[in-house]
Amino acid sequence: EAEVAQSPRYKITEKSQAVAFWCDPISGHATLYWYRQILGQGPELLVQFQDESVVDDSQLPKDRFSAERLKGVDSTLKIQPAELGDSAMYLCASSQSNDNEQFFGPGTRLTVL
Amino acid sequence: GENVEQHPSTLSVQEGDSAVIKCTYSDSASNYFPWYKQELGKRPQLIIDIRSNVGEKKDQRIAVTLNKTAKHFSLHITETQPEDSAVYFCAASVEDYKLSFGAGTTVTVRA
Image 1 (cartoon, helix red, strand yellow):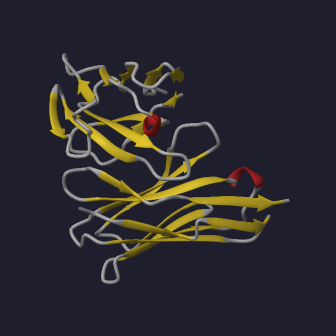
Image 2: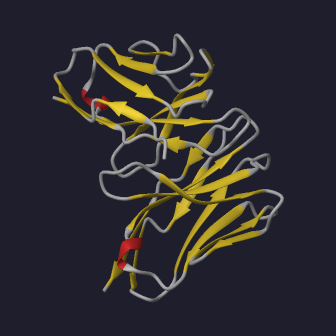
Image 3: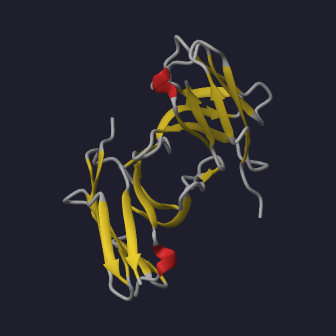
């Protein structure tokens, strides 16, 4: 069964450093989402792509976060500079166009020291 | 935007008993309501979903009910087993497919 892939699974960094996370959605899924999940809370949408275009980035802290999906397939989420409050699980999900069901990747757990 | 509230935050049940988790949503335009199960350290996985044109849906031991008038929906797990222990998230979505999640319910099934 196809799954969403993410790397790295764990990342420890010091504040003010740059970090990047990668996501490979299920083949054929045009819609890709990045979520942040703080411990003990539900996932919160950061950015939504339709193919290579950003559909919604209203909750993305654009002063330090950026996301791209240049060829409409895999995607990268970057944080620069990282802050202590960025420590969280970063989840990627994908879905087919015009379909609500989202499939999640295993996530990248970020710890900022 | 959509606001989803989920209760209770923790739930402990005896093996074999039923578990019920309730969620309310704010946006009357929401039309899709999935439930995800997340085991410790693992990805959220869809266990059941319901759309606004249906009032109830069942899949073996799990069922979801939706009350559009009251803007709430519930997850019911019957004959609970130890492997049902996990965090459960409800979510709601409008036409743009963006999911708004509840805060989660930690379910513990006591053997």
